Image (cartoon, rainbow, N blue to C red; front, side, top):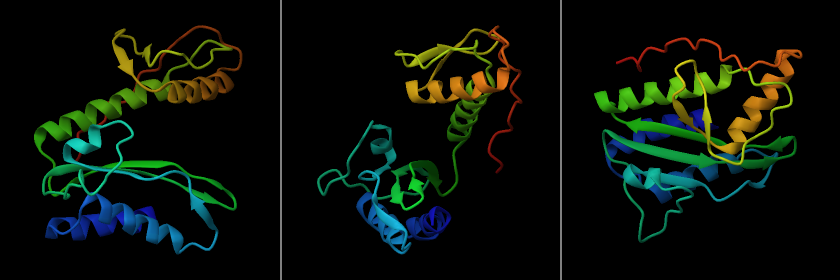
Length: 178
């Protein structure tokens, strides 16, 4: 369903008729085709251009923006199904990404890889702060407490009692292909 939605955005947004509200309505309609859907997990966050950078943004008739060519669109959506609850966030470029967008994408990906591959000391729990030191260079990487807690729990399970904080070398991802 998400892949069908993203394909729809890819083909319809460049025509200039898709806006934030139309996009979130379309995604909800796709979700509702699934007989196991019980309800949405939360109201979708559908943000085009600068609206996509507003935390917990809610599109309205007053703030609704079109998905413009070469701009960024964010969709955060979820459903409650018989077998579980989903929460998925996707950020896509409508059209062709700029060099700056490619650079930012690559940097965010590198940060995610660094946090995901960090080995935390046994017993480490999520932090109340939204920042954590990661990587051998000691640079500050920003993330959410939930993401840190999840990474911490996964790392604690995989460390098998090792207690030293030893971040792994993250592979250097190539920038998005052109």
